[in-house]
Image (tube, rainbow, N blue to C red; front, side, top):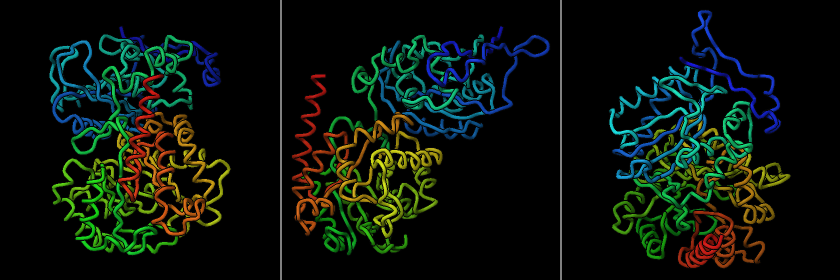
Length: 511
């Protein structure tokens, strides 16, 4: 017999959210004939877990998301992406795992049918239980309801013992309980502290990076574990008017030579920018930007030295992003987080590439005006505003597991704001965690290199004389949880980063 129960507030004292739904009590939903019925007349919020270890796992995830959206599941949040060792049946390939949160009008058994059809259409067959599969889709939560039938149990019966499910589940829930539905999910836990306590009892964040569970970011068909070391992003400005090295690398020959130098000095990523974003910079059209960028990009892609390196395009034009990725670039680095081109987010979603979302108010011409420099608490407001932009990106189809966050040092910030951000990177992550743990765990990029605030503090009016101050800023950033540093001088900053990485690793080993 199918039993379909609306969740009672079994722990009404759990928090204020749980108190607010305390009058719900348990209700069995039956038809007039006494047969339990599906409820699908209103939107229900759901959590669905994803897993894959056969074929191109990233492609499998992308296709599963596409088919879920096509089938009436509106995805609103994504967890991080985890590469995990298999459990139960251990002699098989590594899995990718994640979870998504979404809205659907489908009843729970209808939803199960849709997910099973997607699995079948993607090549899954009946085989060994817990064995290899191109895609595995499980309903973890369905609205405020518990479901128990011969073919479906919600919450998923083994969720509490599986780190590869609990980690992405916590990502999509966040560290704050923002709705009655989320509160009901916590009450399913056998622990008084809800899912938070269940995750901690399992091992919590200490499991990530160990025990066969690591966060990864997909770049092409590769998986990047950004926790292993801080990545060096070398800056290649192809502009005549950039604040530091404008005009130096406008020719293809000069640009190629600089790329070769930065790679030899230890750059992991080369960031190519053909549009200046310094304060009061004039704005180029997408075509003018492409005319500068593409000849250099074509030449750089032919360099044997770039094999194994990543190329990023620094642009806020969707047309430029699309053309550059089509040519072979790997990452879109957008100072505007999609605010300066209404097509950017949709285009990046279709490209399936990592997206750097940076905080900035206004545009390069207006970002330093008095209105855009007003903050009550710069770290909290940067986190809140950046979250709003990233949520828009997620809703446009860019999964959280492809997003890199950048607090935007030097963009709509004064000297004091920049210092607060450099010292407050952990606080920014904490603020993001209240809304999305996935985004709080995202790789963080910082770009203080040779910025004006360093010159103001150190009395270095010439940008090229600010490398020592840049190294100090980078050091503070890496020790504060930055994962990528964008710099002009790769060689000297690399030594600082290596030392910081060693200190961070030592600190973790002693924890």
